[in-house]
Image 1 (cartoon, chains in turn brown, orange):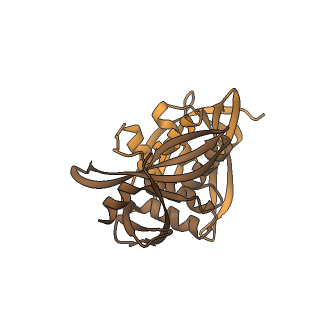
Image 2: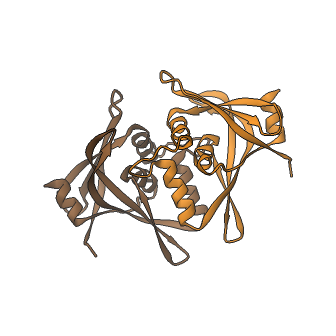
Length: 141
Length: 141
């Protein structure tokens, strides 16, 4: 199994005039860091949940959290496990892939996710974020 | 238990210049219908999933669907179960509340949700949408 390195969310950069926002991840026990381009809705979700802003109704990532918990699961960690070129609006773009790692009845459930959704989900409970070592090497070379 | 009436999604109205979008629900076996104001991200999610547009990575409501399924659940129905005034940006606004009804290991799990997220989630599988009779009466009077 590939080695995984713990990361932390260092910064969110939201530019209101742009549809592309950025989060910056940094090694928890090291100095390497890199940006990930995310969507505006996910950037605001991360920002809102980081600040603990409450809503009268569950917003989308609150809903995901409530689904995981209501179905007897616990989000254990997030793993960014791939970086590859995919077609986005007809152009190839390097794109990160992640997984939610959920504990449920002593079993581990892996669910594919965009890093942005995974981090928006995990940020409230400071769920640890890991990255595959090869992906970190590719992201920071 | 209050009677519930089956509804269907009749129309989505997306105005690019507005942050407020609309969905229209109509009785499946009747003529009453009413609009619900929803957010832009949720409106695009409903529209995209209705049209079956695929993404290389799971978008947020695909993720919710995969969490429900991956944790051994099945979304059985959506129930719009309340309409009440809540404070939105410092002003009182009439706001709909809904629940996901999920079957998991012969048990029923209820998860609070905004109607928009619930419908974005259920639209792919034509999950039936119900509304509490009193809420329908209030919405259409």
